[in-house]
Image 1 (spheres, rainbow, N blue to C red):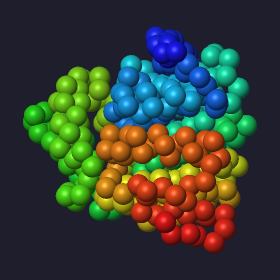
Image 2: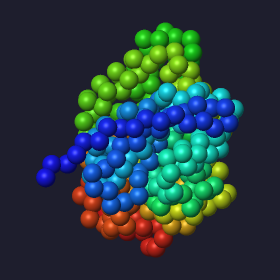
Image 3: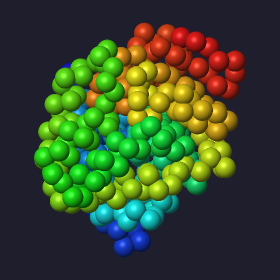
Length: 299
């Protein structure tokens, strides 16, 4: 019997004067709690493509535009992660959903981490990708240059600069040419509102450490990134994993910071295994697998 195709339901939400949105697509055969996808600084709720489609095999998928993202209102750069985290709680309340699995990547990973600190009862399991405590010094000049181009131009140089900041120069990255083309189109089509949000979100990253690890999230958490990630280097992602009492670390082969574009099928498989509490030790696409609750094990 063929699977049914469900039309996504888009809903508006409000919190603290901010308007924001959710996009929920129902699975034909859900066996896990719904999965929430929180992306990077210019990510939109419609941008999840193959990752969203893959997850629908076993769970409903919720893609939000939280304050500062996509269609939602701009979040001023002087505010931290509390507003987006509380906005996600309100969103779940509005949708009548008690508990979810969460994937949060890049800039959005700080929101996932904060939600796990403040509302651990709302998260079954959490995957954080391309994350760390703060932006390393070597990544800051490229990010500042991209902000300067977004603010003052020339605008035609903004897209290439943003792509270079996000992508590793390493030659062995899956679908590298395709991913570069996708990013170039996304940044090239950014309108004034997109650019204002990019500026605010990047300045938020540059002005402070968005993750305060003084409170350990009481949620089973998997930290992951690509082996060639030059924006949020693997060793920093792994270091942050030790701030969680129940954590795992997985490094994906032939990927850098953009694992959702470079290795979407593998990312879906990883999330499916982790959210289902299955073993992670036979991952053909991982260079490192460590259960940080016990003695680390190399893949």
